[in-house]
Amino acid sequence: MGHVLDSPSPLSARAQAFLAEHADRVAVDTGPDDDRCRAEMRAVLGYCDEQALSALRWVQQRYSGLTYLSPLRGKIVFEPVLEVDTGTGRIEFWYAIMDERPDGVSSGSLLPDGTLLFGLFDVDLPAFPSLDHFIECDALLDFANRQELLSIERPERVTSHMAELRRRHPLLRRLERESGSLVEWWSDGELLVFQSSLDAELTARVPDLNRARAVVQTWHLVSPLACPTAAPPTAQA
Image (tube, one colour):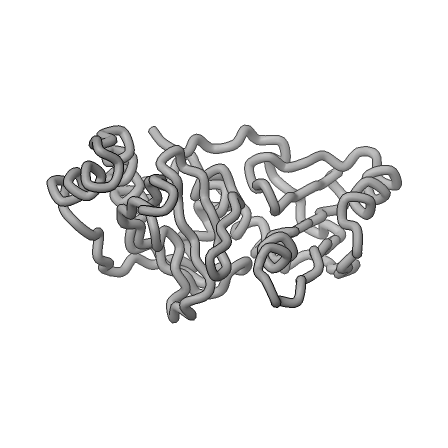
């Protein structure tokens, strides 16, 4: 499979149009070659995980150098490289999503199975099942920002808030393709709802840091929402 800007399928038509309008490709460092990656894994793990190395090369071929202004994260660059965490013995692909101007605090990394982690200081939490889910989320947020904004709320108890919202709008359905572990999209064809607990959950785990509130944004759809129940994209071919 080629680079996502050259072969964007299986991204949705909305995500493909979003990348075509907003994204570019820049040169980035892909890190050590295969032999050095194998040596690093053997030094830390005692063995070489060839599946993880294959996953890294696939991810790099597919996404490395992708850059755009993310409605969720700001200006970002995709530049995953291999890292074997000596503390956990876990293989990660660091710098999968980097701020254009890194602050040394926020991070975005991948696990070999495609799970996207967002981090704050030393805390990392799973945010999306794949990079495609993240791109789909950005594309939908870009679409949402052109709809009629009804409310922005920061409830103290987001689970109760969302339960009440679904009670009042029983046709709301979760949009799987654009959602993740801490970021969710819901729609009933008339309303579009975005709920993010990402910053709240990250800040709750960092000592001596004020906890952020979850955010729930609601829009009235003035444009039709195409394919709201489409199946989620695969993380890897």
